[in-house]
Image 1: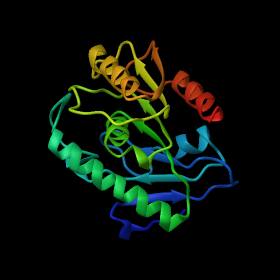
Image 2: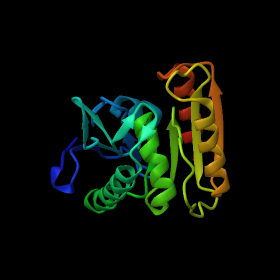
Image 3: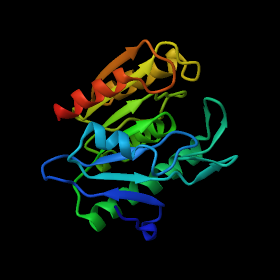
Length: 206
């Protein structure tokens, strides 16, 4: 494992054990950091390279990838700027580490910056796993995602993600042309074993 803070983000990188597997871009939830999802990434795709940045926004001591005005209320201008910044980091990291286009694996706040990458800088990703993502507004325009694979996992008892915001995200990605598999699980906001099983199965199919 190595760290290259000169790429603009505090991050961790784990090289691939064997070639031929898409790298995973690990995007933590609120209060997480660059270490949080490394065990999950290694479990889901053991041979893949792992790239895990820490969000730059500090919300009362908790790292995030973009600002929010309240629970479920995004700072849209900040989201746009942070999305561009993260996309530039991904491109720099690909060159620095010699890796291919990654599949994003994002949880909660990390899932939300991941779908923002899909909608605003789709050339940076090979696909995405969005766990407990939400879209609380209608994007002004959509890219052409041309069958880009997306797995979206939400919980039917999630107190943080209203059903209409997860459904809007699914519909928006499909309208943009993404190949979305959506699973609504009997779960709350936290990760479950079923999330892990579905994500691992989906990744094997890639």
